[in-house]
Figure 1 (cartoon, rainbow, N blue to C red):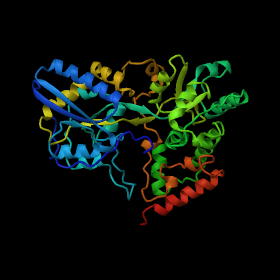
Figure 2 (figure 1 turned 120 degrees about the vertical axis):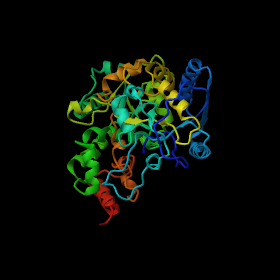
Figure 3 (figure 1 turned 180 degrees about the vertical axis):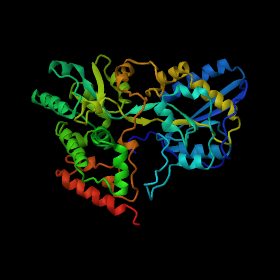
Length: 431
């Protein structure tokens, strides 16, 4: 929702899916089609070169299409049976709609799985992936794709020099975060900088608060649909209040600041903290190689234990269409890519965070490894919430962060919660 990196489209053609043929020695051309993303392209090129070296009779033909054209090109090539590996889902985990959700459409990926348009994968090699990632991609307990990586969205970059100079330790609860922000503000330092002009960067702050403030995200999502939970419940109002509190520590003009400018301003010392996704690390390093910085989970909860895991989304996956010309060779390539040493090569170039345990690539990765969690992947609020397409804009992502002043005009969080609940209830299917 908030953090899409590529468009997705429907898939046509194909037959009933079957487990991929293990094949023998792979020979011929494997056509791989992905959306354009320079770091990811470099990762695939490195793996493809290693695969061709190990399989002298094989050629990996990589094609990268700009996001705005990708869905149409992918669908046309799948229809023509002219692609062996491509993106099945460009927007995260496999999320079949639960029974309690009515009036929303299944994703194109799930519709394609139900229609038998993707090839089932099998083999012990799939065990190399982090259990939480693999489970999130499975459909009905079976594997149809492999991941590329993870992006975390609930973290905060911080200026180590400013924290040290003001005697601030990393906050582990919301109250500690507020105390740190107040200390910085009293010292004449802007605690937070955010790019509000495009809205979605500020939405990441909402993701961080909601993901840790709600006692049970899944239960709250279901309760919204069944009526047992409401946006006017105390814990939901508290989410809005915490967002409002954090806004008070940001540069007053943040709603008009472009996301393209915040990294440079952060590394120049104009603010002590920058809420942003894990993808921002490369830009920070590039802007100022000498800048001392770190990254920690936004502690939205008052319980420190709730705040020790970074949450996020899965990046695009790779799958084999059921009408691929050579599913055996395609499977061989995915198996090769899934070897830890090959995935290590890919992830180092691609810039994603790993979807496989014990992958070492950058100092940044090492610094946040303690926050990965036991399963290697935990979805944020955006990966749990099921929006109602018939509901108003104020609940399109659940919590109306963009209506809270100064992003919007509302200063009364109870009133905003009431308006959100009214909009939500009006859109629920009537029995």
